[in-house]
View 1 (cartoon, rainbow, N blue to C red):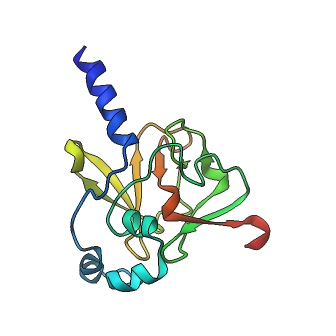
View 2: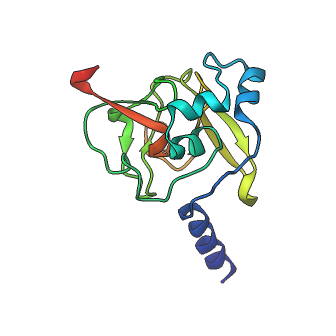
Amino acid sequence: MRKVLFAISTLIIFSCNVKSQNNTNMSDQNKKTGYEVNKSDDEWKQILTPVEFQILREKGTEYAFTGEYFDHKEKGTYVCAGCGNELFTSESKYDSGCGWPSFYEPLSEEKVGESEDRSLGMVRTEIVCNNCGGHLGHVFPDGPKPTGLRYCVNSASLDFKKKDQE
């Protein structure tokens, strides 16, 4: 019974819109970590929508099954909505059933950074854009071959370039 309650509460947590998982000022963090793209919160607010800012800069998340790209099937490249860094291709995208766009690998290991996330009472691996430090989502070890990984990404942290536009 405890396992069932834990599973249900975990599902509810992932399905809820989390305003902010970390109150760290991401702009200050960028300057410390040396991302190529460094902007103040005011500069980010001028170029991002409120939802993009909340996810990319405040480490939020969107409701499951609501994002623009969770069921997206076009061929092309998914780029960071903050800086345009190419992150994932449609070839590595798959339907994981989790409600967010899922990929089994990034375009290259240099494109996506990882760090430990201990928010919400659990330990996960956060993924960020290695160009601007924008929060993308999390990576889990339950994906398909060949990597066995599931990069679970917020749609609002992505833009899409169709294959014929690349």
